[in-house]
Each structure stands twice: as structure tokens, then as C-alpha cells.
Length: 146
Image 1 (cartoon, rainbow, N blue to C red):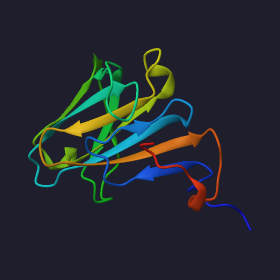
Image 2 (cartoon, helix red, strand yellow):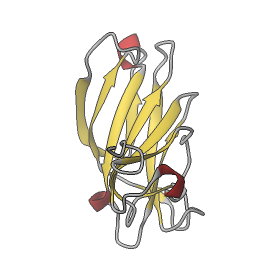
Image 3 (cartoon, one colour):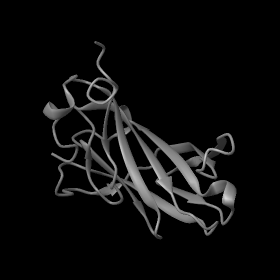
């Protein structure tokens, strides 16, 4: 029987808005999936920290591209580019209800191990740590914020 993705390829934190996620030493990167219905737009801010208490928290200026769509599976993703920034701003448009922001572990500053993406509105954020360094059965995965 093959191992499923959880524990082999990914770990997830479904309620990750403003939550520190361990990256360095845990995974090659994290994919943040964001959603805010109603075509109202939102701003998401990426930060890094040295530990899960937020020590040394600072904006992580590394987002040069992200993807958006309606979030209901009815349309393809649209690639959006920007000058390197710590924020993603989705427009007040149904085609930007959903956004995906990917962060590579190599983007973190020396000594920093944690990242978080925070919505300034009512958007939801899910974190998928990917390309896990240590593969485990789901019951043996460490907490993503530990």
C-alpha cells in the first residue's frame, strides 16, 4: 500500500491566518492558500521569525509572484507578478477571491525558521508545508508551529 501525500509530501495547518509555521529544517517550502468571498479584496502580509513565539519578527520581502482565481474551481489560476514585497493585495474582483502564495525555505534570513501569512481582512489562510525533510505517518508528524 502506498503512502498518501500527508506525511510524505505535505503537512497542513488549515487555520493558519497569522500562525507561525516551521519551515527551515521541516520542509523545502510552504504554500499558502488564501480565500475571501464576496469580491472585496484583501491584503496578506508575510513575516519571518526565529521561533514560534515570533522572536525577531520582520516582514519577509520575497513575494514576486502569486496566483489568483475565484476559488470555486470554475476558472484557471491567473499568474500575477510584482516587485519583491512582503504583501499580496488581491483586488475587489470575484476572479481574485482566492490566492496562492508560495515561499521557499531558502528565502528566509539567516537564523530565521518560521513564517506566517496574515490577512488584514476576513480572509482565511491555509498553510501547506511541502517537500517534507522527514517523511512520517500522519500521526507522527510534528505540529507545524512547533
